[in-house]
Structures are given as C-alpha cells and as structure tokens.
Image (cartoon, rainbow, N blue to C red; front, top):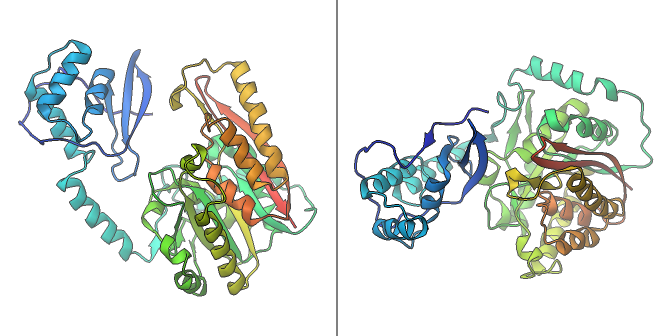
Length: 416
C-alpha cells in the first residue's frame, strides 16, 4: 500500500491560515508502521476525499483537539499542557490550512464542495462502479476471465434442499474472501429469482437505519436495473419513501462487490433493490431495543412493497463478521488463542443464523457489547427478520489474518 508523505510538526512554514475554531469532520484514524515509525493514517470516512494523510502521533493528537470548541490559541495551550512542547502558531495555522484544503473540516469549503458533488450525483440515472479498476478489473473480458477462474472449482453439481430465499455473502475484497464467495455464490444460480433485494453495511456515518437506492447500478459487465414499478411502489410507501437516500451508495463497497458475482451466476434478467444499513450501536448500548417502532415499520413497509410488486425475490446480505486486532484498535496480541476465541464466538452467531433467529443473533452481539465489531450486524439482522420461518445452512467460513489484524466472514443459504 502506498502512503502519502508523513506530516510532522517540524515542516517548513507556509502561507499563514486562520480558522477561528476548526471542527474536524468524521475522519478515520488508522495506525500503521512505515520505515519502523508508528504513524496514523487519516482518511475520509465519508469517501468524499480519496487522498489520505499520514501523520505522526503528535500531529494526530493536535488534530484531535480541533473539535470546534477551541480557538487556535487554546489548541496551542492544551497541546503544550499535555505534551510539554511549545508549537509556534504559524505551524498550527499551516496544519489547519492543509486539513481544510483536504476538506477534513466542517466549513464553507467543505459545504460548497459537497453541494456540488451531491447535485451532480443526483442527476445521474445510474450509480457508477466505484471499485472498477481498483478492486477488480474495469475491462469486461478480464473481469469475466477472473470470475471464471474464481469459480472454476465450484462447478460441481449441487442440489439445493429447498427453494432458495436468501444468500449471506461476505463483502471483503475478492482476493481475501474468494473461498467463501466461491462456496456460497454457486447456490445463487439455483435461486431463479427475478428480484434480488441486497442489504449491505454502510461503512460511512449515517443517521438512518436504512438508505434505499432507486438508481440502476453499473458494472463493467452491464447495467443492472431497479425496475420502474418497484421504484414507484417504494416512493408511494409512506414509510420507505422517507428512507430513500442515494448519497451513501456512491462509494460503498458492500453492495457493489456482490453485483459482478450475481451477474456471473444468474443467467436470466433480474432487478435489484439496494439497501444500505446504518449502525445499531444505539441498540447495543441500550438506548433503543429491537422492538423499536422504526424496526417494525421498516420490515413491514418492505414486505408490503414486495407483496404488491409480486415478483419472487431473494434476500441477499453482503456482510462480514468480526474485525479484531491492531488495525481496529485492539491492544491484545492476535495469537492463535485470540483467533480461536473469536472463531468460537462467531460460531455462536452462526448458530442463530442457521436457525434464522434475528433476535438471538442480536442478543449474542449485544452480550459482548459488539467488542469484535460485527460490521454485518444490521444487514444480517434485517435479513433474518425478513426470512423468519425459513431455515439456513452455513456453507463457508473463514478468518483472514495478517498476524496483526483479522476479519472473519461466512456464507449462508436460506431455504423455504
């Protein structure tokens, strides 16, 4: 991975810049090591700015003080009290200028840029393939060749044990998740459903439990439609029409990574209804419960729309499981014992998925305070609630690790 140049407090003076009380946007801070130096990678959690900024820990601490409550003089004073180091005001101003130029602060520059970006995206009839040429080839022939190779060993004949109603798949990149993608997606060609409702994790901040897209979605293979009749029904539904929100879909990967795989496996024409799901941390922390009115209204609203539309559908979730280790802020060593313990906790989760028990699934994660960061919590929960009365088989599971961090994921098939 290529990182940008490291930003130190000892850089040369530049043009003086002042912002009275700089307020940081939601920025991800990811620790990493480069040339034996511990650094922090700051990247835009909303995906508005693709350029990341690598900074030293002391700079990251100073940036953390820029929460909108302090003037630059107060930031200077608080930094000195905490570290004992006096930093000249010109250097702080230069840091603020650099952060503002990279749209990392809430302010006029950011708001103006965002308005233009949103207006332009809203005018597009289709959501472009954001990861094409990055996570997978943008060339259709190369992509098909990759998929042929990926699924070559999964062409053995399988006989589903019932009518397939849902698929649980990872949303990790193809290279790391290939084994599980391979095991679960071979079932999809037996589903025969002209409509696929796709739930995915929204990795960007959102205040909504659902963000529904009614755009068509482009891939290098072709454009996948969201049927006009389906669009009309969602817009007419008094609940779901309040959750139409295209913007979170613009750069999100959890749904996009499913699309070329679906196209490769499904030979008939099909439509999609993409739904990104937000965080349920307020539920985990006890501020809300899963019998919350909003949860019931969303499930009921979608069931009403699907019933009115009348086309057989498959409920698919692109959702990973645990995220543990150094990359995710854990301080404990990621040894065999830690990985095995996480695997055993995953098995508790998977047991409730097998039983299509949404409440039991949620309670297991709630009991551990989501300490392993199950990023598929919300999409899997709603998938299970919509598929109540079905049964499920777990057909694949894996733990990727680089020795410092780990992500786990599973593949499941739901039957009626």
